[in-house]
Length: 60
View (tube, rainbow, N blue to C red):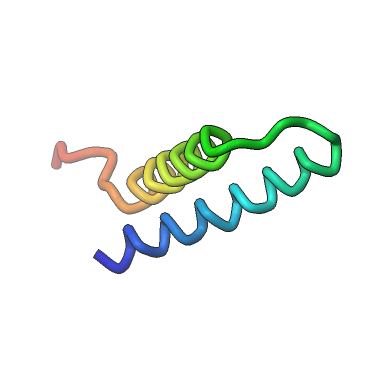
């Protein structure tokens, strides 16, 4: 459970940086931006974790 919380916190940090950069470029920022970035970061990190911690071959 703590891994999921950590993924969400990392996602929120990435979303904060992303939205801050968009604001500096005078681009619109709304709630969809935050949610989208958090979801993308969480999914990518979960996939990367699964790829490194899953055996790739089960054939002896």
